[in-house]
Image 1: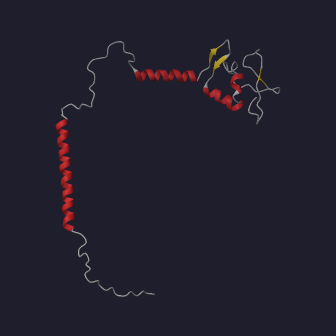
Image 2: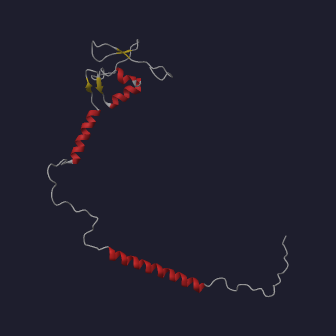
Image 3: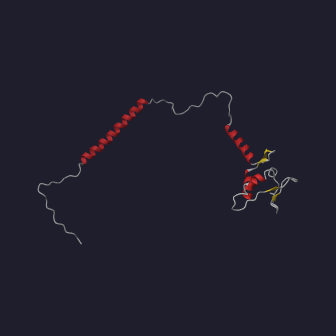
Length: 170
């Protein structure tokens, strides 16, 4: 339903704005803005050239040394050295070795240690240290009494700690 409004009667002496904006003033202001930006850029560039002296050599590039460093040369071939180091470390991680034979401490390969822990739990690493130095062709099977066979004939058998599910320990 359309609404009907009463016609507006002008108020005597009241005036209204005849023009909203002055387009010429806006254009002059924008032109002045770009002129001011160009002027400030030119001033900054002039100051830069005044304060920084350019030379043919870039000051940020370090020149190669013209002489060899004094003796002794600590690391003559670093890439070969790191390759040899990594080969040695890989060999150390993948072989068996006595760390302390009197105390029965043995270094075993990481893959073997992970397999032992996965199969029997963390206690397998401490209970089988002596038997893993000379590993048998096949891993020893636990007997019915819960003992683990030894790789060395005549060596005493060791009781492997048994962990009950839910107890959190041996």
